[in-house]
Structure formats: structure tokens, C-alpha cells
Image (cartoon, rainbow, N blue to C red):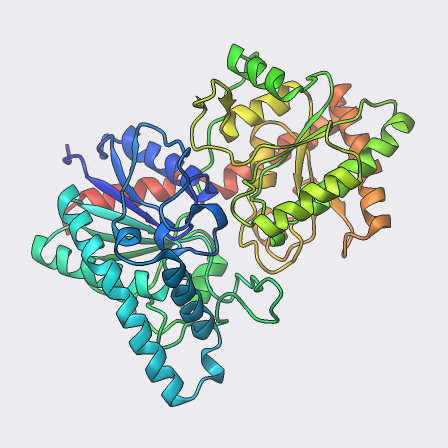
Length: 477
């Protein structure tokens, strides 16, 4: 029997409620099932290098909660430098890296020096963190993207020194997004958040004995094949959770009471962050159109639960909250302000439910999923429809490029027409209410379509590839 691995996590997302952490939880469960993984996972979640993440830079939010298996690192960097200066420097470097093709040689030289100086603040932290935790394998989630070149470079250098001395183990770079496929735009600037391709300043995983590279789709593997590295990633699709069947439990009912949810009305989940490209405003407009159309369909008005936290992108959050007020939807739209990795009672004695429990809640109400990206070229997977399928829920979806490549043409969803204008939203609202009415009436035709969705989801997101990865990590080098 292979020995149990000490696994650590570095996540470039800068959020304690990231969907990446939920997928990591599902992957970790496979390692535990195989008896290969220690219970406790030390984690560095990137708070200190993501000044774009509103309320979490530079040391996280004070009231954040983590499941008992996850142990985030206290980062000393905010104590060493003035946070405002660090935020400005990190932002300036990130923007310059994204504008690399337009820079002259002198500008690039100065940028390289600036990034190296910032990297010094992170190198010591990473070196000490790896050594203190005696890490066998560290999972680096979305660290290939250039959110903070100084932190990534410091991590790579510290990890290379650590694993070279250790002589075993290494880094699993695990990317859910890459440069070309993640066309996020800067707020109020006509510029990309990331460059379209890697450049001399973006650290790409290289082929060494201690580096592994995993991506979540064939499309990302194809993109990575054009990167300046001899290391080729293996494809391991995201692992989805198990959604238990059966009646709701007391914590579900307590949550419903807290939020004033009538479970006789369909609960629609919007399982995305409150971030502009995720299109939460479209889901809100869709709910408004459903409220107007519900009487014509003989249906109760649904409720909409938005997963995202208002602290990630406060400006966009204010716009969404203002739209909710403008449309007089405060009773129907509930902004959950971040869905945790695991369900728990918070410090105020209120239940916070994870995505599995929220799926169970929506299923009990015979609701659905609204997955409404606001742009077509950011989502590389888009897990909303898959999560809905596992819980037997229908989905309404805006157009995004990766949908058919991931789910296939047989997957049944209600589509919002291109552009998501008022007429398209109104039409999709009517269609989705018809679907929800069929769900409430146990329509056999809809049941067959939802069974197809579940089958396709299980085929598209198998656990087998991650079982292979875990066994390889535990085996001889």
C-alpha cells in the first residue's frame, strides 16, 4: 500500500469561496478514497497578490470560514510592506505584462526588474511554507495565468529549490483557464486582463522531473501545446460532487427560513461569482421576466439564489444590487455573498450551505439553474449545467463558445438568444417557465431529457483520469 501523501494547495484565485476550491475538494475526495492523502491540506489562497479581489486583499476577510481539512497559511507579506503600495505595484506589473507586445526594450527591462523586486517579498514566504509543512506534492491551481507574475515566479523558484533538495514529489500545475481562452477585460479600460499568449515575463510550467501539468479540457491542452515549454499537460476533467437523493434535512429548512424562501416556489440557482463576465445581471433580468410571465403559465414566481460574494468586485456588485432594487426583486433574488466549500453554521448562528446542499434545495423545490455568462470567450467549461444535471434540474443558458464542445448537441437546455436583449430574455423566460411547469408535473418527456443530461454529464466528467493521476503521484518517480 503506497504511503499517504502530504498535499498542499496554492490557488491564484484570491478568494475563500472560489469554485476552484470546491472542485479541488472533489478531487481530494478521490485521493482519500484511494487511501493516498493526508487529512489536512495546508493552503496558500493568494490573498496577498490579488488586489483586484476587493475585500480579500492583502490577508483575506476577517470572518471567512474554512472546512476543517483546509488550513490556509497566514501570510507575513502584508506586515512587511504598505498594502496600498503593494497593490499599486502588483497592478502596474500585471497591466504591463498584459501589454507586453507594445512595450519597448527599455520598458521590458524595467518591468523585469520591478517584477523581480516584488518576487523577493514572496520567495521567503513560499520557501518557509513548503518546508514547515513537509509537502510531498503541491497543487498549483490557475497559477499559469499572469494574475501576479512576481508571486508565480517566487513560488516556482522556491518550489524548485525545495523539491530538488527533497529528491521526490513535486508540483501539479492544474489549470482551468489559460491565456487565450480567458479574455477577461479590465474594468473601464480597453485592455485585456491577461495577454493573449505567454511572453518572456509569464512563467509557464517547464519540463523537469518534479513538474506535472493537468488541464481540464482538450481545448486547453491544445492551447498549451503552443506554449514555450516541452512539458505537455494531461487532460483530467473536473470532478463533480455527489448530490444525495432523499428528503431535505433540518439545516436545509433552517436555511430556507433564514432567507425567507418558500420551497413551494421553484428555486433557481445562479452558481457563479459576482463578477461582470459571469453575467449575473442577465440572470436577474431573466428572473424579472419570469415574474411577469408566471401568471400566464399558472406558475408561482421563482426565487433566484446568486452564489457570488459582493466583496470580489464591489463596483459590479453595486450595479447588480441596484438592478435588483430597480426591478423590485428584493423578495425574489437572494445574493448569498459567497457559497462556502462546506456547509456550516456561521458566527451569527446562520446556516451557510455549500453547492451540494443548494442543489438539494433547488431539487426539492423543482427549480433549476441559470447559467448566463455575459461574454462568449471566458468560460472554458461552465459547470452550471453539469451541476444542474446531477441534481435532475433543467438549465437556462446564454451562448458561450465552449458549451457545445463540452456538453455536446444532445444536452438539453433553454437558450437565451445571442446578445441577451430584452426580447431574447423574455422569450427564454417563457420557455423556461414551461420547462419548470413540466418538471412540477413529472412530464415523462422532460424526464427523459434530464436523464440524457445526467448521462452526458457523467460521461464528460469522469473520475477515472484523476484516479490515474493520484496513483501516479503516489508511485515511484
